[in-house]
Length: 153
Image: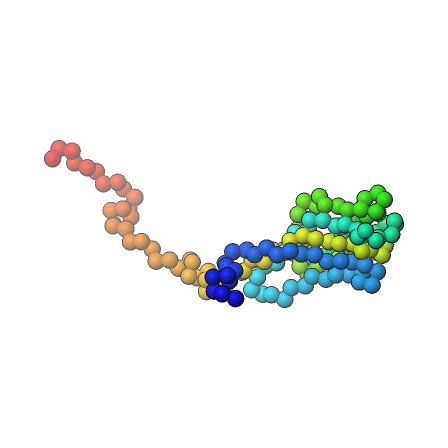
């Protein structure tokens, strides 16, 4: 890869996210072992495949709450003849680790969205940013007083 085409890792990167849940793969886990970056999933749509049976398909999501506890909630309940897809998730955002499970039905159920990755600032970078050399001001400016101009000259 040429040097010019390297991504700028100082800016957040956005990638496609997608998984398929079906009878022989009822669970998809997103786990991140990356101490140098923050990861976020923004879910956009959940939809049934054309070959899905006309019965209810329940998709559950399991993740960590703000206080560090694991919780499970239904993400979507779909049926081809009634509601084959949900595409108005409004960017439902979750932080990995997270698991998606097909609780009922045989699928296939497709989940799509975006995966955001932003690099964490290292301690050295933070120190460099916070350790800027102060601009020395003349002592008269440091006092905050504005010098008076003598107009009589």
